Length: 166
Image 1 (tube, rainbow, N blue to C red):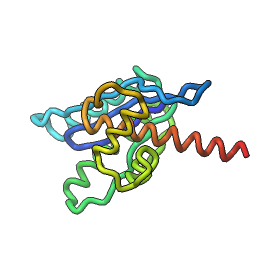
Image 2 (image 1 turned 90 degrees about the vertical axis):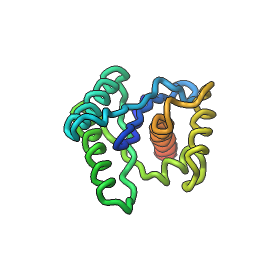
Image 3 (image 1 turned 45 degrees about the horizontal axis):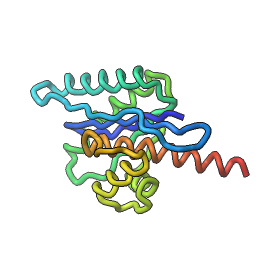
């Protein structure tokens, strides 16, 4: 199974592609990166940039499923609205690609990767590097989070598959 994880952000949107080896079940890093929006563009143009870059990644890597972080509570309504717009664009890109979408809460992602739902970003980055056997840190914290989202889905799918086999 190949998963494209997406960590939506208003300035930086991370993406990461991870797959499992069918024979061993080992995780394998395929790709990762960050969509850095041009702040000089209008909101509509920035959303179009995110859409275009995520669509290109979907076409390039042909994931079986797209995994996206759910919206978390934000004290700032304006920031939450902007994040929701980016997230909507990511969901639209996934839907138009014809691929299924899985959504995970931040606590679930951290629990699946680190074993602790309130883990710090540095702990998530460290475990992503260990689980994927990376020699260096991902492109950005957003890319690391996107890889963590993909890993979370793979772990969840594996657990559900094992429970179904019983």
